[in-house]
Image 1 (cartoon, one colour):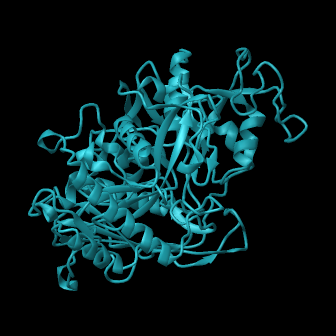
Image 2 (cartoon, helix red, strand yellow):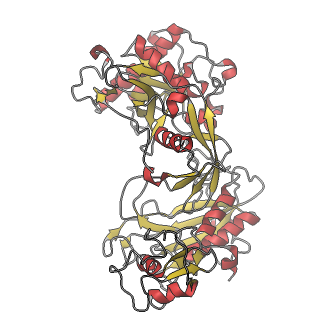
Image 3 (tube, rainbow, N blue to C red):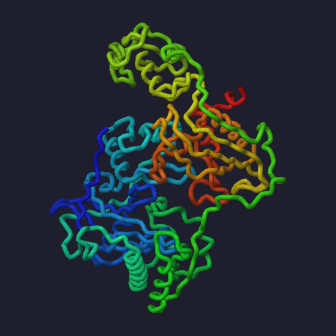
Length: 567
């Protein structure tokens, strides 16, 4: 499906603006840690535009219109968002869309996260979904936008194509985003004095720009005396999941004693690490004191990744799970026969196939396979069609032979339509060691339960023939990796299945890291783990009421079931 409503960026000196006399909807966006541009809400965008008209070189205090965004300031001159309590800086941009698209109509599409709250899609995805919705398409494939999800409008749900997991989605009417016509005068373009349009990234300029952003914005907020939302709640129609940065719930208690209206200064980076210079807190404090304003230092909460130290005598085996360690060595492929034999094992011939597409080669089933002339196998004629035994999906036999030959060739077959697995699926996980045991500490949300700790350790090595670049070295960053489960019935069930997945080499694989962008490195393989022991600041910790059910679904999608674990 085409990508309708694509945002148009026309940067001039760091600020985009539409062609003269062309109406466009303005959406301000910030760049998150995954390099994705996340939109501010329509109310926040209206506020930014109003400040922009008054002072194109000034700062925007986001807390004036959204109580959830109190720590955030936008410096219009450097086009960066600054978080006061942590010192984090993120780029922002002013993007434009067609007035007839979703933001111009005030339409927001959202998905339900694990905590039951609603999260807005990125703006280009929102526009694409709305476009398909208006055309009355029954479903939408988001793979063209880089996401392995299917949207079903009849059930208003989103499905992960790999795990088959479904989430609810909804269409919500909100305030329309601001409209602008024509270009912005040259006197309002920025950053001032920058001929390249990009702000300087040296430490000195970062320090000066950040300090100016913090001080100017706080002084401006004092002058304007803008009242916060009643009761500290967001303005009506606001989605607080759109706020930038990580969740702030864990930091509420740390600032509970700060008097209202007293700005908090960033002291997270006083140890000399991070993107903001340590002197920023001190310089901002001097400026605030000079203005006669009170100052209160705060420290942002840090994730609790590991439990307190545990002696060897306190470490116990997990009841119901034999042993405390599993090792994998070189790959042990099942000595299956040739690909034709594997395919025929799970297929039944269809004498009169229906006149529909083979979803592998996209040719009609009543015609020859698209692999005719490309792939030749004795006994497999290009026109032969078969039906998979359990799910009933039909394909050309030659197409399935080609698909199997390009895969792991482990004697198993996976339906490309519904992902049903035939046989025992194995992966390409490098050799390593998995340890598991009980420790006498409790996870958040499981106060009366001990904790299962899993330790994965994979060394660096050389890629084998089943890996992306055979013969080339691969790296293994962050090992040993510690993961945690509650020691209850469901937690032990998950552990048993994880042991099975480890033995089938399904937990990790070799690929490109989504976090660092490094290629030829060991990465997780679609089975999520909790690596944060005592908090959930990163989203990889507890409490998380739906995690155990979700990981069971992910294991099932990999062909790892409780019946297989007992076998």
